[in-house]
Image (cartoon, rainbow, N blue to C red; front, side, top):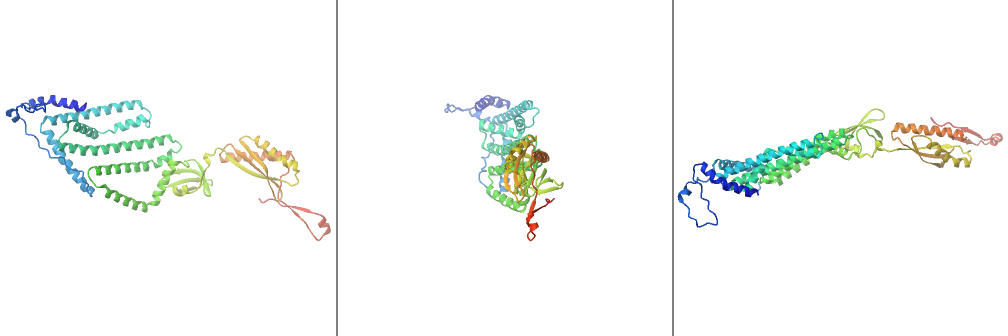
Length: 443
């Protein structure tokens, strides 16, 4: 349809442009009328055609990227000069092409303005919605790319001269790569910003690494864009990639510790084994996470001091995140004297179960005779504190033990304490008498 409209515009505009130059209209021969006589006088009034050079060959790869860029820049400069000369020649085809380029560029600008306005109205109040991101992408539809698209469409419709078509091809490739690189960068930054807004609990950690992530993404995008441009202008990017690989390897070896901590920081931010404010235990230490930096993590220990540990070493530990506990398991033991009657000893688990279930904020798990101790019948009690906070769990444990102490007093059940029985030989009176020496437990 576009090709038909342009052909119709070309056929209608040809006589008008010729009369505007006070020249007789050119005689157009049709393929269906090959034997039609041509008036020599009519042909002689045509202006001298502008001879354009053939389209240069930029497909041959050059081993030196700088040399390839210089050759491409020189070729593009010559092609642009020929393109301007062609536009200034006054030929009706050149003027029609110029008007078509200007019209298409203006149409694309109007479409961008209208779409940006409508999307801005629909996405009002949310900078990271899909419509807001689409609005920013449309807003980054730059004029240089509009002009490149208009030139490409004009070349496709009107089949411009070969040298002009070469300039259009070079310009369109460069403009398209730059435009798409900006779109990819904007979309990536919007995705990270949306994640930063959604993750309110870990926003400080994500914000601390946001600039580094942005730098890495931008560097990768524009490196790929540069390589695409060099490849399209005829440069041999193999040697350049090898050089970049060797240089990156050298930098990585020299700063491997920094990069290891940096990527560990990104791993913490993305995987979220812990967040700022969580209480964690790692190795022999534990405390509350205060800050997650690019190289180290700061932990406030229970004793009050601040512990600073590198992100790499932090991830090498087995981390226990106390903040993500649903309930805290508490296990404790107690013993009763051997003088306790077997029937009473059998009822102790039921007594303990009733006592624990009567304490608010805890959940009974099990209780039973676990072993015969040196001076006591040992029982094991396991229950859960429904509040995972450490201080509240310890208060629940205290309430359970006090309730158990009162219940045993009421049932006349004696708690055992360490005792030793001594047998003394040599004295009949002493032999006939056994004495028990009570040993107080260590404090």
